[in-house]
Amino acid sequence: MASEGFVQAAEAQSASLGHPTARVFTPHPIQDRTDEEMQALADGAIDALVAALTSSH
Image (cartoon, rainbow, N blue to C red; front, side, top):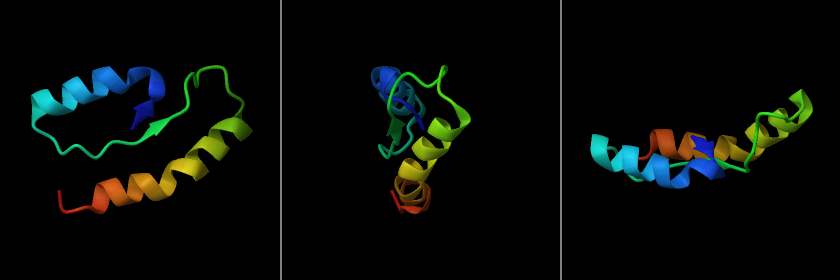
């Protein structure tokens, strides 16, 4: 899981480590977001994150 600003880096790291292609990205940037905004990002990503972690790939 990473913010959209790191898509290429995440793809390269995943490929170099031989990990599956399931990845979850949140809007970028995140460093200046409020706690409430971060909670909303987490709420919006949780289903995709659980699916990526529990997939058989």
